[in-house]
Amino acid sequence: RNEVVVDVDVDGNVDNDDDGNVDTDGGDDKPWVSGIFIHPIKSLQPVSLSETRFDKHGLVADRRLMIVRPNPTTFHGNFDDGEATTHRFLTQRQSPSLATIEATEPVQVQVVANASDDGSKKYETTKTLIKLSSSLLPATTTEKNNSNNKNNNNNNN
Image (cartoon, rainbow, N blue to C red):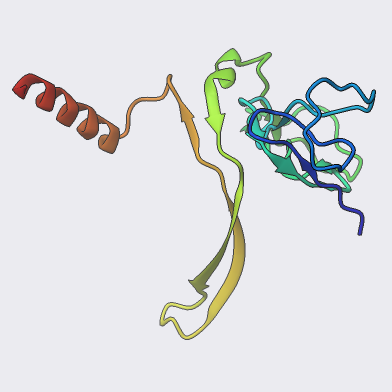
């Protein structure tokens, strides 16, 4: 298994020649990385990383998910496997507001769930969690309460 790890310090500096000293001027003419970004969900804002890994698809967790919408009717034509297209992916070209949505780095979580009503059978699976936020989305109840509490505290002072 081939794996590459790139280390970048908090200021974006890289130790290119493994001498333990950060090369900030690039004087040794070796390529260096100024920042690493992934898009966990295609067309949303990027996530900055301090290190990453590569797999056979490229950067791990980069553009593995996308937002899709159902087709109102089946388009003419089929995929190579004969299936009709049922969904179309959505990009910033069609919906520029996607650029306002922030996503967190994906987190893998093990989930154990009941496979039967009485709980006697269970199954285990892995879920990928990504938190999304945007200034265009309405505030959640918790955020509204926090905002109201902050305003009330300011009025009391």
